[in-house]
Image (cartoon, rainbow, N blue to C red):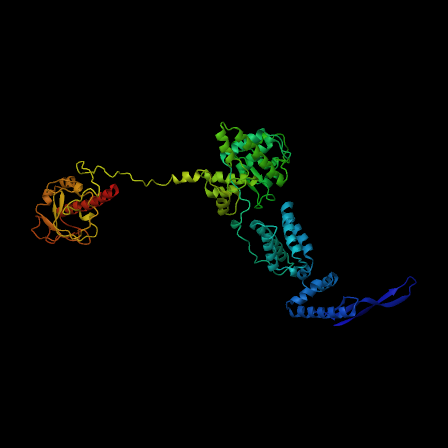
Length: 582
């Protein structure tokens, strides 16, 4: 590539022509498309030759479709804007590369204009711009290629540990600002990739600096009553402030959203009065219409009477003054509540409590956003479905509604425990036993029943010997298991004689047990109850030869099966009752 001074032809006032050489050196070359180009460079020959070699390399990279190495990118950023513009016009440099070579301060101004063009508020645009600008200025980033995720991370970490004592939430706000700016650079075609894309935010739950609380119903009534009678604070009268607090706690609107409301934002006609928040002033950037309570509508009609549709509904002061205004009203209402104490002891107790205090015992604040927390907490405490509460709160996730904004009131957790079932004993230790002629159940330690009168269903895991089935009673000839958990109720449940007596008497009479149990039939019980009943003596008349349970036995066998199954179920039930009574 040749680098030389170009001849300049001039004509004086008398028409005489002259020729002189240019002050700057020119790089003369053919670009990647074969067109002859003349590029003005510098006055110095050596600097011009160096620049010409770099331009020649850029031309070769463009012809080959290759990417630009970092050292060449740095040189492009430092070259004069006029040279960069000409190379972009010839197609040697891409438009995004030229835009990326602009100072970051210019890009920040364009980003702020883009935020405003999307319909966002001026406050949001200023806040985002200032946060990103602080990071760029303090880290001394001049051009796009200067941006480094490591430097940004270290800078924010120093702010957290240094004298600034940056909170976790503020750390995330700054991270969001710089990442938002870099994303816009890529979307707008000014950069190829986002250098801070992988920056992560920190857990705000581990560093809560300004937790808010929900006001109780008594606190709200006291606050509204005292504010209604109070004088003017920060340009708002007591009646206007009381209406402001009531609207905030019954609609969940934020201070900035209420500041944007006009008379035309309220629709009182129809069966469902609403208030509409413009998308530009809503935090979720979406226009929403919220329902209003009937009694609140009546108070708002009086407050907005005589105002034009475009008039401001509430003349709120600045953001910090709104917090100071609510803090002053809380202090006034608390002082009036303490003054209403009837005794000195009552007054001392009220002074120790956190009723209407700006900061409670747990360090939580009652600022203006706490009214929104109160609104959501009241919805949850009133039994509103979580999805409906999320919709009224205008939250993106149910987790934000239930975890961050809903709070438990005092006594609410104790009341919730009362919904659990009562597990206390319902039977005394000495009780009347059912079906034993009003016999009294004897405690476990008082007596031990004879081991020969036991129920097969109450003997745990024991191997049963030959049993005799008689009318109304069960008598054991031999028991191999020494343990018996049903010893408490055995004397009351079974009789020792062979008469029709005990809890099975009615069943035996109903089934005409004499016709069934004509002779004593020994019964062998194994692992499965009533699996098989072998016969050692002659069976009663009418029984089949092989005495087994079948699906189609004789009538007498069906009656026997019903009695024995009912006996087993009843014995198990009585065992459970005896254990519970003991």
